Image (tube, rainbow, N blue to C red):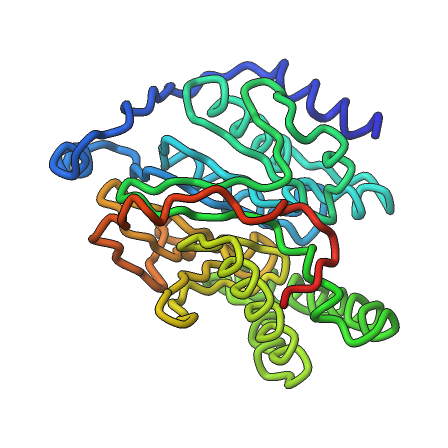
Length: 326
């Protein structure tokens, strides 16, 4: 833990020379949001941004891509939905290049310059769970959080490791999966090196193979179902998570209710994130490192605020590891 504390100390002492951004006040009407959205700026603006599974400290982290995104974006809310710093990887060996330090420094800079930053620890950075409900240099550390969108949607965010027991068949399969995934990432890393030398953009071999393995697809589906059932119990309109490195933005029905499921993916394989625009639309974006812009993969419009009656307290505590969802 001392090594991690040192990294934070170095980041807070770094000099910030980039221009600062003071986010706009919460808009009271959609017309005001539209006006803000159409104002030209050298940076792209969002109301909220969700990132997870960055895995700073891992050799497979695409930190330089994420740094490009952060340097060309401003937002009012930044949500870090777990596995931002890969403490598991750092325990095996210390790997902390300048690009990883720059991402951490940038996040701290945003927090100190007016962006509301929430950090929800995952399983690879679970040591930070000891500091939930506390604040550090403008960052709020929480076990989970409910974001209210511009148009009144209640968006529950959690990392997703709470549902591992419902996805993994056994501990043996889980360990085998981890080793196979490491092999895939090794292949992915070497293929990316060859492709970049030839001038081709980043492409995830790991993601391509994973989507064609039945066991992996079953695990992804089981995870999604468990998260949606839990969100339905909490009577929220949307759930945003990470953990499984499988980006998705989709609408699901539960009785008469509909729930938006968003997985913001990762910055190891996919380089994806979820955003809420200044007009209240949710988008799943993928970073294009050649053009240095995010491309829209999926989008969900939420043009009607929900009735006031739907804004209720959560029905049960969120942070219950390995909870079974009925």
